Amino acid sequence: MSRELSAEANALWQAYIAAHPECATAELPTIEAFGDSASVADSLLHLVMHGPKRATASLVKEYAEEAEPLPRIGGHWIVCDGAGQPRIILRTTELRIGDFDSVDAAFAWDEGENDRTLEGWRESHGRYWQRTRAARGELFDPASEIVFERFRVVWPPVFAD
Image 1: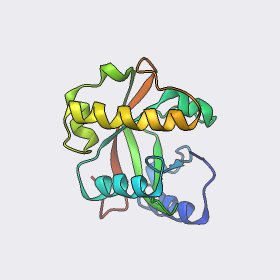
Image 2: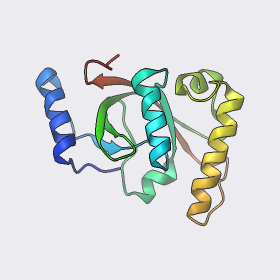
Image 3: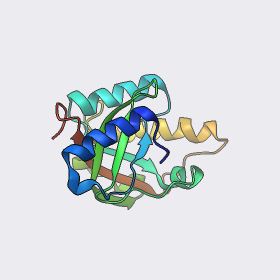
């Protein structure tokens, strides 16, 4: 996660601002990719650009580790593909912090991954956080705080909601 805009990200942001001057005073967007690998980033980005993904979940701890602020409603973020190229701009529409067991079927559906069921969400996200926390020498604790975030695609227009 970063707030430093590359030339490509800045061009995407400036095109958005030109079309939406009401956002000209907005805080610079974060720059992110989904997941922990290029293939996961590309797969999840595809679900956003061409499919049903309109939500995501991250551990609060990950924001602290990256020295990044938590997302805020109305905030923008630029999502990069697995090669690090900025592709789309998202805007956060809803946030909630809870633990692993607090996720509900509606959120799992909106996240748009796998079979979109609550059971599928718990299985895939539990496996993901076990893997990513293990890479940091830690165990995933289901009691950890999780940011449950819903968003909409705002740029480019071909993908916008």
